[in-house]
Length: 287
Image 1: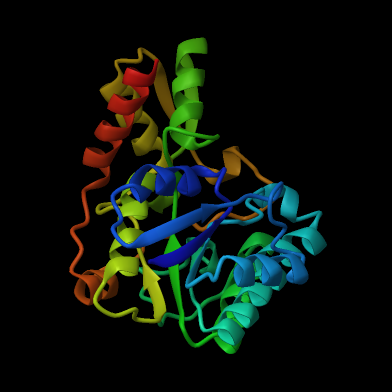
Image 2: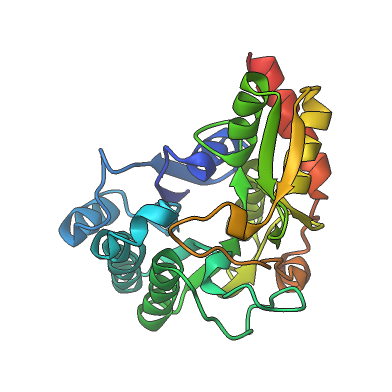
C-alpha cells in the first residue's frame, strides 16, 4: 500500500482527486489543506510525511489570486516557491516522489505555436514568476519530481470561469468577455484522471509535462459555449484585453502542446467542449 499526500485538497483539483481516489488500488490518500497542514512550515510537513510514511506528494496547493499577487509578492512567493522547495527537499530526504501542479503563466503568451515543455519561459506577472521559481526550486532539490503545467482550470466546485458565467448569465441580459486571449479550458476531473495515470504507471517518470483538454478557444468562445450548452439566454459581446484591464498581465496565447504526456503515459485527451458537457451535466444534477 503506497501513501499519497494531497495538499490543497479543498481546491478544485483536490476535490476532483477525492472523487477519483476510490478508483485507486493499492493507494492510501491523505487529503490536507492549510487548516490541517501548512506547507510553508517545513517542520509540519516533515512530521506529517514521516508519520504517515508518504510515498508521493501531489501538490495542488498554490497562491492563485493573480491580480492580488502583484501587490503581495512576498506571500505569493512563499506559497508558490518556498513551500514547494520545502516539499521537494523533504521528499528527496525521505525517498518520496512529487507531482507538482504548475501553470501556463510561466510563459509570456507571445508564441505562435503551442508551447512545448522546453520552450523558453518568460513570465509576465508576479504569479507566473513565483510559479516558475517553484518549478526550478523543486527540480533542483528533488530528482523524483513530475511537474504538470495546466491552464484555465474549472470544475463543479470552488470559484471558476464556468460557474461565474452561469451565475452572471442568469443575472444579466448582456455580458462582455475578452476575445483576444487564446488558451484551452481544462476540466479538473480530467486532470485528476491524468494524475491517477501518472501515479499508477508501471514506473514513475519525472520531468515537466503539459496537460489541458484538447482544442483552443478565447474566453469569449468559452463563454458562448457555456451559455449554449446550459441553455442560458445571455448575449455575449467580445471585448479586447485593453477594454478589460486587470492588475496582472495575462498571456495573450497560452495553448500548451500535450504531445509529451500523451506519448509518455498513453493518455487520451478529450476535446474541451466534451469535458464541458460533462461538467455542466454534473452541475445540473447537483442542483
